[in-house]
Image 1 (cartoon, rainbow, N blue to C red):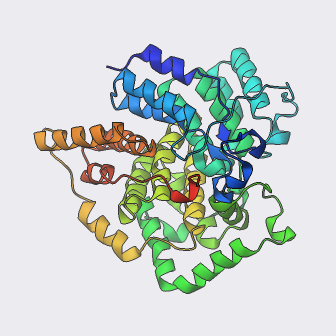
Image 2: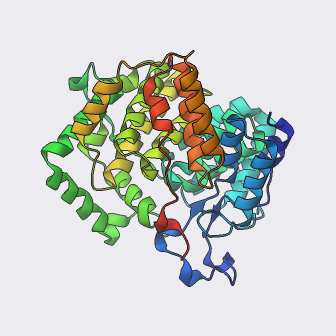
Amino acid sequence: MTDATLVERLLNDRTHYIEFNSDPGLTGPAFPADRLLPSARHLSNHAKHAVVALAGLGAPDETIEAYYRDYTTLTPYGYPLEPARTSRGAITEDTWEQWIGARSHYADYCAFFDRRERELGLDALLRRYVPPLLPGWVGAFTHATIHLGWALDAGNRWMTIEGLAYLAFSAVSCHPERATPAPEHTGERPVDSLLRVAGEWERDPEGLRKWAETLIADTSPGATAGIHPELAGLQYRIARVLGEGHPLIDRTPPWTEEDPGAAWDRLYYAVTLLYLAMPGDFIALHLITSLHAMEQIASRLPAEQQREAVRSYWRGILCVLFSRAEFPDRTRLAALHARFADSFDDGTDPAHAEEWERTIARAIGQIEEHNPKLVYVLRRVWRRTGHHTLYRVAAGHFTPTPQALKSK
């Protein structure tokens, strides 16, 4: 059984910065700046996410500690972490919104939220500061949201402070002010909305692909205004689509206004179906682990803010998918939906228990920490949805560490 004291100690660690390769001057002689790929700048420190997932899967203490030690020595991407930075005390109640999304003052945000939590308590802190940050949840390719949501799942105060600070630091808005109701889509569930958007791509693949590619290729000052100049690769592409929007993204289906509890379960089904349509896809996997995070965050908010979290999540994942200049095949999605919609496992079948044990053992042994996170989330959802087969099947599809992010 995992030692809670060990987990707390690792999650309370303040030794390392929240990102690495954020400052080429800190890479050191073994990792000179000219070895940094543009797509490998501003990578998120995942070490604590792995601790939460491994502990949740019941990994032995020595496995968790060894993973943390190895990751914080040299990440699976082949780059070292950066040392923590010192707060200069620059963030106050009057100025905290001034630096949202500026990718600066992370340590100052940590100090500010640390102080405010001691004054307000954690629940009041979240209700006060999360709502203004929710629209920016896709920043840092969802990792700030993951850091905060997984911290809340683990019940760790300091990691929660870090997550809030990272949200403020990295926010890129999905522009809720552009959202307009789409009553013509009444009766849809998230999977229906996903199939509808996939159908639009299927009807006009060249037109939508050209739209996305032209948008992303336009680096003129007017086009890139408001995008942080250091963003590159996937983070830049997502920021560009977030900034521009599209009618398929901004027309908000009515289910986003309904009971958030039902919406989360239905969103899990839709994004896991999406993952099975692209098994092992690194980007699609993040839609699952960030959904778990958003659900954890929203559960601490009033009902209307929970609905806003649902709306922000839906717009955000569409922007992520559009940023690829392609979309999952509707025919494949529909076939998977037909196969899994009404398929449930017998929760008492020892064969399924044995399969989960094998999958968990594989996940715990992975260097790529996204895989234990995937298994941790999908096993939880499998249990709470009456053992929906979809989640057991999807949990077995692991992702490799992207070559594009690895050091040469």
